Structures are given as C-alpha cells and as structure tokens.
Length: 277
Image 1 (cartoon, rainbow, N blue to C red):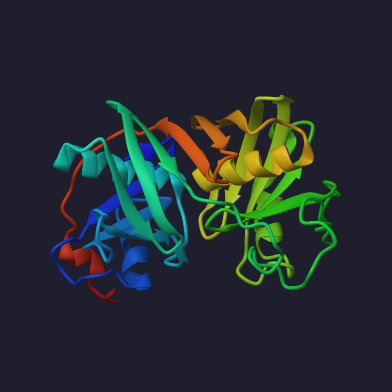
Image 2 (spheres, rainbow, N blue to C red):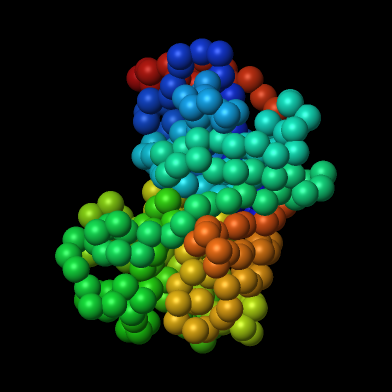
C-alpha cells in the first residue's frame, strides 16, 4: 500500500506468535518489488477494545514508534475486514483512534506531541525546543531547528525553498547529530501561508521519503508554536498532501489523508534463507 507516496507493507500476523527479526525485516525490503519505507506488523491485540497491536519497522530493520501514513494503511485493512468505520489500534507510542471518512480517506489520532527535551529525547537540555542550533562542520547553516516528538524524534528546519535543499547529503548528517541519542527524522519546511506548508523529509532509518505522516504532524505543531501557522494546515509532501490539526481541547494531533492499495502477496520462505556462496 502507500500513503501519499510513503511505501507501506502491511504484514498481518494476527492469530500467530510470529514476529519478524530485524534481519528478516531487511530481507523483506530487499526482495524484488517489496522495498518499503515502513513495515507495519499486525499482532493480536494486547488491550481490550483495540483491533491489533502494530509494530513498525523501518527498512533498516530498526523499530519506529509511530508512522502516520502506515497507520492509515493498517486502518484500511482493518476497516475492509471488519466493516467498522471507527476503531483503535495499539502501537509502542500508545493507542491510536482511526476513522474511515470515505472509501480511501482516513483520519487518525496521533495523540499529544511531546515537547520537553528529555521526552524527545535530546542528549542534554536546551534553552528553547522551538529553536535549537544543530550546526555541523561542513554543512550550510540552515538556522535554528524546532524539535518535537510525535512518536518519533523530529527536527524541523524552516527554509525559503525546500526544493533547493540537498536532502540526500544533509539528511543523514542531521539524523545522527550528537544531540539525538535515538537519531531523528529531519524535515525542511517552507511556510507558504498560515494554513499551508511545503515539506521534504529525511526519515530516520529510511532515507528520503515521498511522505511522512509523523513529520507532517511534528511540523504543524512546531509551526503553530512559533506562530507561523494556526493549529491546522495542509502539509504538502512530494507524494501528496495531508491535513493536520492540533486540537486545542485535548492537545491531540489529528492527521487526515488518503491511502492506496497496490497488491496483496504471500511472502516466500526462500527470501529468508541464508545466502550461499
């Protein structure tokens, strides 16, 4: 499946105790036609009232705490199996409420942003999480970045032209900046209007991506805190647009966007066989 170009592989393992190892997750990514950004693995629910527990793997085999585009894809599978239009799933980041708005559009509640330095987390306290210096030797000075945790750590730079950013060069450097003990997703945002942002993302453990839902959420939160936008905006990513709202009454961030179904497959056991020489 995909969500605004974010390549999602949903692996339904409910009814079994199976879980992919990091090596198996990397093997799936290497298989022809299966190169994903995120692998969403469905297991039996742990809490009453939820449809599934979902583990999220990046294509390097590491786990992520949240993936908004992947969550909408999971919601689509669950909605089509159960016929329900509203339900909840559980991830490492918490319980996520999902709602089907029309045939291919879903809204998910990504919960509250975490904004304190030790919640993001950062390696040390900073004066203001809205404006942090992340200068690195040999890289241009892109100004101060905003840092937010939206299930994953995010750093957002505010620039005049996102297209001009050499993301393939600067993304991996900022991802592994010493300030981020768990690495970070790195975004470059161009504010076009109080309700419109253009965004490009280097995703932790993935690389350049056409879409990143948690980055869109983190960017809206950061922009609102700086007074660059209101509490709702359209976020335009290379793969499509998402509508993000930071709801004042409960501090929750809501993401609305499309999903696309591509194909259904059965994984071949041979892809997990050790390589022979």
